[in-house]
Length: 173
Ligand SMILES: [Zn+2]
Image 1: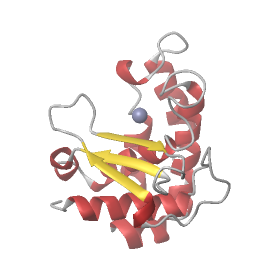
Image 2: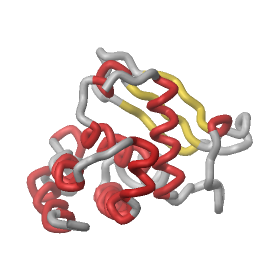
Image 3: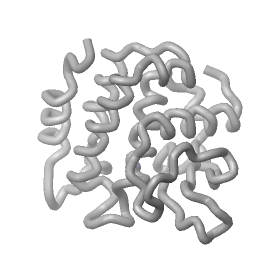
Image 4: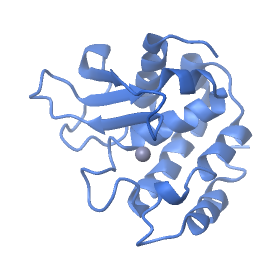
């Protein structure tokens, strides 16, 4: 994959408009257009490859902030990129602005629900990002929780991965 930043932003927005994650500050924001997406960037030296969160529209009308590490995105498979898009759009609903830490149990539960929507609406999603393997996408999603990405005070990454695997394996196939 060798896409420009603009194309990656379009892919994120397109998938977000299909999944329609609950927005904490606006009741029915979808479809969200380009002018409502506030974009910055992540450096390759950063500890994470993307960042996303909801915005209050009173600030220049932006509804979402989104930032990616372009080099990292272009070095990954489409299924991995879709997994990150799903992770990031879930932060519109669940994250540091909600109770607990950014990757709390409610966040991971919502990741699973949103991944199911992507699989249910696979044809629409493929119009935006191109063809992808449902099986490989599912594998990327349940395999993601790790030590730096689960709230260690509440749950162990292994337990969360197993739970997500049970919930997703074979879905839509
Ligand atoms: Zn995150």
